[in-house]
Length: 141
Image (cartoon, rainbow, N blue to C red):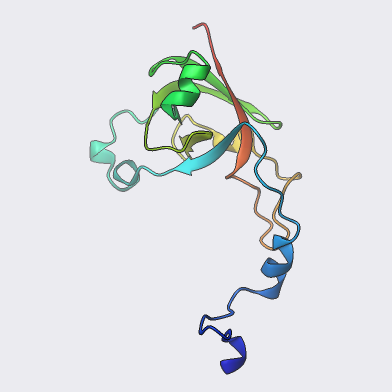
């Protein structure tokens, strides 16, 4: 066990393959990045879920303002792999530059934003579903 402990008392527990991959990591691209959103009340209790059919693309107020988007507007969320249409939501607790959509929510089809062939994690074989560069455009609906 001592060989896994660093000189300052911290543990060296990250698999070497993960540590090696850090050297290949590129910083975030300029623009918006998609992150998953959790709605535990929706997931855990159908009784309180309402219809559950409407997706919401949530943005920081500054990002929404730059794009002329108001809460309730219809927007297209687009990646290099696909897009989805949903209503916009505004949340000042999100970091600027971050867009959030609940994954697995009926109607959101966030899988259309990913690829099973491009940008797949080499260690887990999972498609990248977070930190995706996205574009959000207001629709005239």
